[in-house]
Length: 198
Image 1 (cartoon, rainbow, N blue to C red):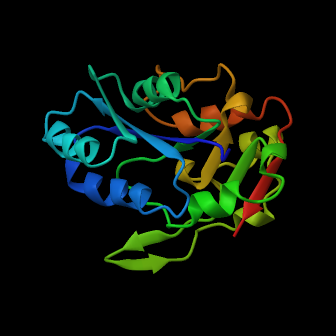
Image 2: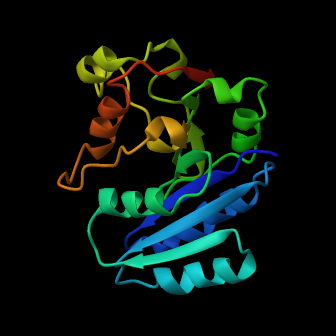
Image 3: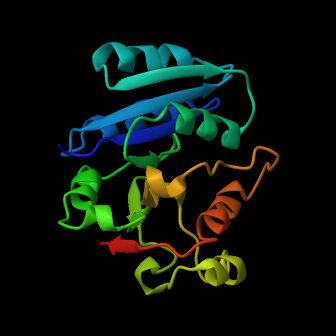
């Protein structure tokens, strides 16, 4: 049985990006996924957009919650996730269509706590190269503390986290910024096995 990937998409007032984001999930060549869309009390038409996707494909799940911030929305998704792997995906980001297949179907995927793929920045429809070379960075607690935002950072959607390796870890809901960085530090408090895939 191919492992299930739980995609967690937090949304707040960004309905204009949501169709493209969710289409990139639907287009994945690897099909065993669920997509949990968490509406964090958006005042725009997010719910209207999401309901179209839920009707289109039952793998899309919808959660509405009172506004609590990005960390709160991601945590709500983590608590609902049924997959063996977790993919965080902000609603203004998209995935390449082979992201899941390249990550999960390697022979020893289950050996790793984390699988990291590269990223591109889109500007006016053009892809720009990454601002850092993730494959050249040795990921450990010291690196995350001392070199984050200096030599590198990892956009959260670059990573597939093994749910078992996340354990009870959640995003810090008291933070309004740098919540990803703190999550990474907490995740790497213990040594982790990771793989970088181009």
